[in-house]
Image (tube, rainbow, N blue to C red; front, side, top):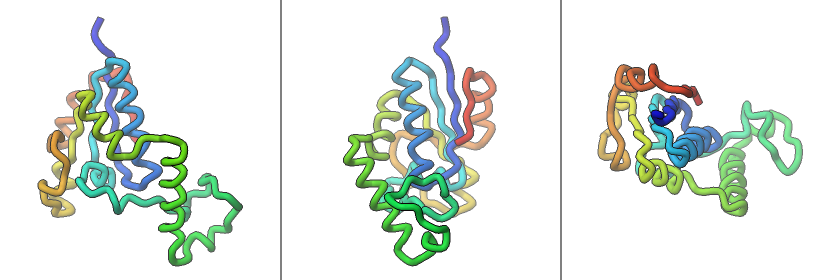
Length: 156
C-alpha cells in the first residue's frame, strides 16, 4: 500500500499561523506520509533564516485568549503587538511546545519537502541567501503536480 500524501499551502507569516502547517507537516511525516508544504506570500517568512520578526497581533484576532478581555481599540495601542507576541512565546515555552525553528528542523529531518514560492521571492525581491538550507524554490505548477495526487490538501 502506498504511503498517504498531504499537501499544505502556508500563506500566512504571523506567529499563530506559523504553527499549524509545521505541526501538521511534521506529524504527517512522523506517520509515514509523504508531505509537501508550499510557502507563498507572507508564509514565505517561515523559511527565512531569521524568525525573530514573526509576531502575533491581537488586532482582528478576537478568539485570542488573553488574561483579561480587551476591547478592540486597546489592541491598536503602541506596544500591544510586542506584548501579545511576548506573552504567546512565553506560553509556548512554558507549555513545552516546540519552537518554530525546532518544528522547521523536524520537518526537514522528516523529509517534508518545503517549497518556497519563486513568484513571491521575485515579487518581494528577496535574496535566496536569506532562506534556510534544505528547501526548494518552485512555482505553483511544482506544487500542484504533487497536490493533485494527495489524500489531504490544506490551505492554512
